[in-house]
Image 1 (tube, one colour):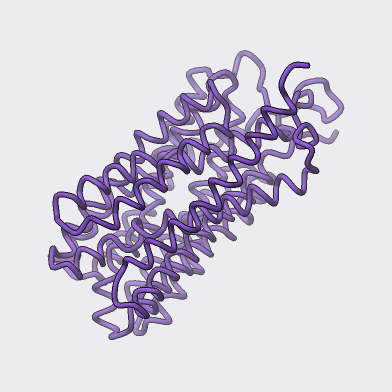
Image 2 (cartoon, rainbow, N blue to C red):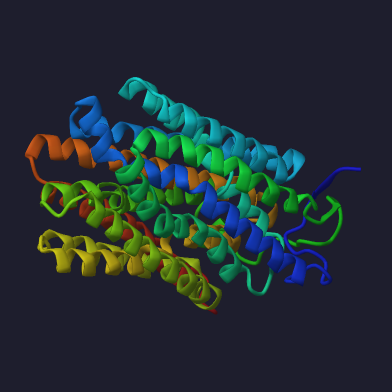
Amino acid sequence: MNTARVANPPPSLVESPYAWARLLTALMLSTLGGVGMWSVVVVLPTVQAEFDVARGAASLPYTLTMVGFGMGGVLMGRLSDRFGVIVPVIVGTLALSIGMIAAGAASSMWLYAIAQGLLVGVGSSATFAPLVADVSFWFNRRRGIAVAICASGNYLAGAIWPPVVQNFIETDGWRATYIGIGIFIVVAMLPLALMLRRPVPVIDVAGGIGAPVARTPLALGLSPGALQTLLIIAGAACCVAMSMPQVHIVALCSDLGYGAARGAEMLSLMLGFGIVSRLVSGWIADRVGGLRTLLIGSTLQGVALVMYLGSEGLTSLYVVSALFGLFQGGIVPSYAMIIREFFSPREAGMRIGTVIMATLFGMALGGWMSGAIYDLTGSYDAAFMNGIIWNLLNVSIAVWLLLRSTRRLAPA
């Protein structure tokens, strides 16, 4: 008998104590697995100096990490659909551990970049999109906040790991730090992965559970492919803008004479407030929907990027970094909510994974572009302006979709 995942599990499992325990496990795995994304940001100035390369070249490992993270999310999602989420988590843990050790032993920038992209990025991907999709099947009424909590693991990693990594870099060097993290990851994550052995609820495909959603892309006057494409463009655009402060804040502080440690603290502060933003946005999305949540977050992110243009003092950079995290943290989870609102639950995993891949490609492109623009201009001002322009594209798409939604879905 063919089976498919249930968008709305039986009442005995929906938001049960086990569902919340599973969410907590997913959050811990996401936090630990996120080290692959944030360690490469912290080590950027150190690696640039050791391998004696330009800022754009030093940004390439981050770009490849995001590409690996995005493409790996699709691969890990397929593994999850076929074998359950425990398989991609275990595979990802092993890849991440091996990748960190290999990166720490790399003898050239290219070997370091390849280890980051092929192993660290792909390995880390198992602890984001597959876990978010898995969690969405265990919650109904509180799905928005549950998805936001799970997605916060990525930012919790960003709040915890940068100062830890920077501290060990200063005391033991970046290579020993990478190798130590690789060993720690496999020891800490494998036992947690075993807690996800229970499969998500299944039903007969022909069954009546999981009826079609009331709203579809056709309700917006769009085909499913057209709406998916717009969400992909919006996701990439918002994250090109988002990547400028997240990827280059450590390097920016080093350039201004404040040191890499201050930059790592700002990154930690930014992502700590991003956790608050994701939780609040999840609460808002449960009440006003994903489109409005996306527009609010995108607009506020643009405001914060503008504020960076006039901020070179240490205090002002701390304040703007905190505001940036508070403003933009809920943007990415809002795409998952939009997909759940306008597409069949049976398509959620594939479509969420595709949009998240686009956001990661946006982060990869934005991280590289900002470094390249810096090399051309000798300043990050033009890079911030580039981010603002991309952010306007995202806002425009959100406004257009929301206007179509309010006009076409309004009561006759």
